[in-house]
Image (cartoon, rainbow, N blue to C red; front, side, top):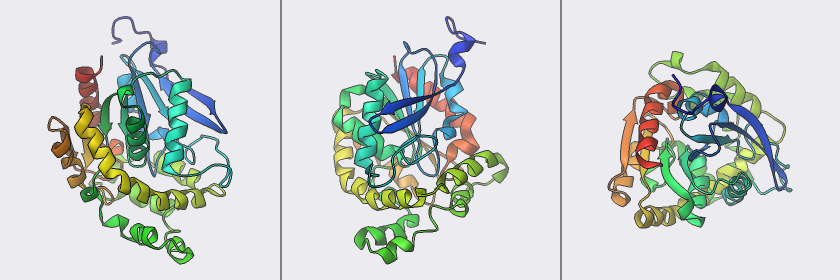
Length: 296
């Protein structure tokens, strides 16, 4: 049953590219462009494909845009040396992307790497962000799990030896582990997602891009106090939907929002890092209700 004034064409997902500087950004789009905008930012190990089931749950009322970040998915980005694979640069590219699409204001859903990209965008233009949904997108040091230990060693001493010690991270085997770790019922995880992201991470040169981003993630932790100050000052409506068994981002990172945004809605699910893969309908329903309450 379609909402009043909504056509079947509005719900159809469109697959597009937008040239942003020297990056050709691939994105999925659905909904009426005149409706309130919702920007979906993926993380690792994922792409906009992670939102394939959520987009139709929102598109009858919202203009939904899910880009692939540079270095991920089908976005066509320059090789290392011609583009800086840092979170500052990803945020600049995504900010310009939203400007070119004339997304003056938008609600934002973030996951994993999408979080520090989104936090930077919000810091730079707080008035543009109408609401935030974080699915295992961290902003607090207590949210960092044991899975970060070898990466933190690399941050402290960015030697070739420590970089080489992380070479199993951007591999199909590691991606499969990230999708299945902490998942009580692996039958709920689509093998398509694992296969797609495994193929994409295996492209020539991509492993080095991913290792560059792992090193630069230290800049996000250093900026956590700035992000937290933004939350305290601006009090954006915030929903945290968290896979409690995530080896990278612990439930404490979601609970910490209550310090800075007392009205934050924090919910946990018995699953792992990529919670939408196993609890997509349940979480999607909560996201929809949150947006309906806070975004007009």
